[in-house]
Image 1 (cartoon, rainbow, N blue to C red):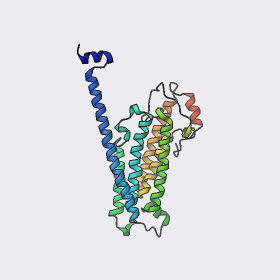
Image 2 (spheres, rainbow, N blue to C red):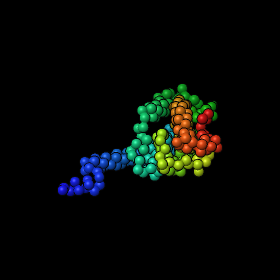
Image 3 (cartoon, rainbow, N blue to C red):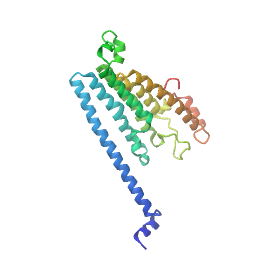
Image 4 (cartoon, one colour):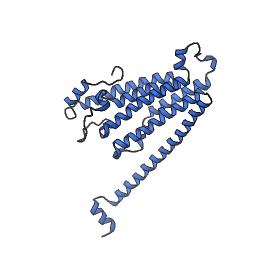
Amino acid sequence: MSHYSLQEQLTGEPEAMRRMNRELRRNLILETALIAFALGVLTVASVYLAAFGWRTHNDTLFALGLYILVAHLAFHVSEFLAAAITRPHDTHPDAFMMFHSREYLIANGTALLEFFVEAYVIPESWKLDPARHSVLGFFLRVNFASALLFTLLVIVFYGIRVVSMLQCGSNFSLMIEDERRSSHQLVTHGLYRYLRHPAYFGWFWRTVCAQWIVANPFSAFAHTGVAWYFFRSRIAYEEATLQRPDYFGEAYKNYKAQTVVGIPFL
């Protein structure tokens, strides 16, 4: 009897399948390492850009560096780390949420386009004068104060999402699970005591604030509208699923009555 045949009898798994699994794991590890390396390089570049902008009093570069660092790099790294901590057996490169939809890539691309057009293409004489319109200028013109304020808000709101994912533990899933797992429990402690969807709450308000770091009014309103519409349909479907008798049933209905979503009109 060959060594492979003996192994197959002992493990119940064909050698070809084991080789395929090893190759798949190797590829996933390599892809994860490459993404992490790229994010690390971009993190160093964005920190340098923000520091250079601060040192040279260039609010445009300062805001761009903060925007890339907080609204994108910190987001992708935190999504992966939260997934790795809560459900390590399900962790894979997609957990970075880098290319999860075409719409996401288009939204981020148009946001950067809006920023560069306003900063470097539109003549200064066409732009709002912040000295004459201080309130509008705070939101519609890139400046150190608004960049710092909205960066802080993005950190706070996204921090709520990350904390809620960790508090939910293995019960959290990026995809709505139509069938209840035997280990799936209804989480009602921590942030979930007050918000029944704190991860969605954090994502939504992060989206609202992120574009104001770089004074992108068009992208800010567009992203907010798209996020609201997305969560309206997702939350409705998710709650209908969780209220099914074969899921949490009356327990979720009672929990729902005692909590809020925290997103306007939802």
